[in-house]
Length: 199
Image (cartoon, rainbow, N blue to C red; front, side, top):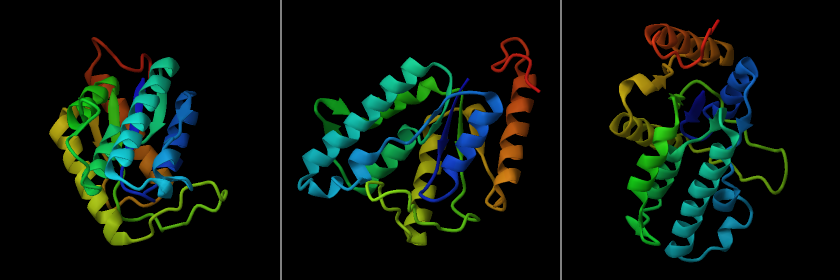
């Protein structure tokens, strides 16, 4: 089972992802985007460097996912496509069409869970000076959420998308919603169940 959690900044992706990983006893893969948002990211001074860093993040995470096998992962290529578009990076980088590359990588996941931009209070990450600082602007969060949701519905089959309703703000409620969806979809696919005997 391979599930990605995508959504705008500060929408509860990590909390939900860790809860799902604990529920299914699967490895949890973090977002691993420090090269883009960490303390050294500001040293990049041109578009080419930023584009190369995004492609490197995408490929390095794919290598980690492939080695891990089954997992729950914080952020998917949808999130990097959102960053790519918001930063107005060029379509081509290092001979790669970034959108095509992301689309091909999305095929690895059994499901992608989309977290809504509303409901979860903004909290700045204070876990260390080397951690990326979160954008605390709700307008930025809204735009990111709309873009990621649109990309998901453009590139993925509806059966692979689990979109949490905006009205759900409690983490326990969100977890229950995702689990219910996984359970029903597993039952609907009895010939080739994704989870085996899932309860």
